[in-house]
Image 1 (cartoon, helix red, strand yellow):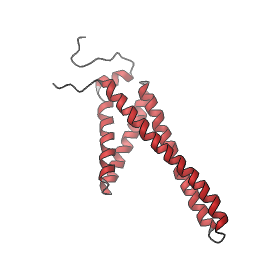
Image 2 (tube, one colour; image 1 turned 60 degrees about the vertical axis):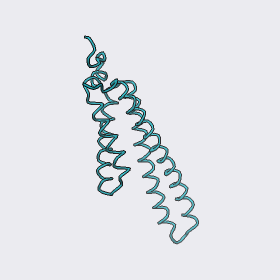
Image 3 (cartoon, one colour; image 1 turned 120 degrees about the horizontal axis):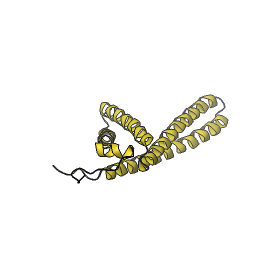
Image 4 (cartoon, helix red, strand yellow; image 1 turned 45 degrees about the vertical axis):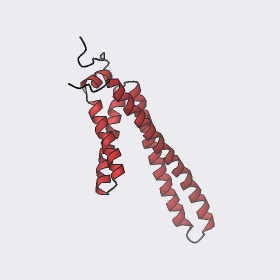
Length: 151
């Protein structure tokens, strides 16, 4: 039987990918939050007749930015839980993997092939790696047992 690698390596790879993804999403959210705030303040004064519409649009961008920042921060927190082998980190990563699978399906429907491959690939990899018995044991505090190792 072919070796499937060190289970700890899979957890680390998932954690690193989740940290990178969370950082990018959180940063994008913060940028939208600042842009929405600036848009709301600037356009409201510049366009007296339609200022309310621009203020509403700026407010919507701010809310989207806040949501993205929270989602990104949650992914970073989940990755910290993975690195520390905390059960809640594994559970939270399952939530993000399920969202990635749903996003991948939506990407397929929208014909976004790159988004579909990335989302479905990461989601499937996370579920596969985090449900392996050797990995589950790491999150339950049991000593790591490698397949084929003497007991």
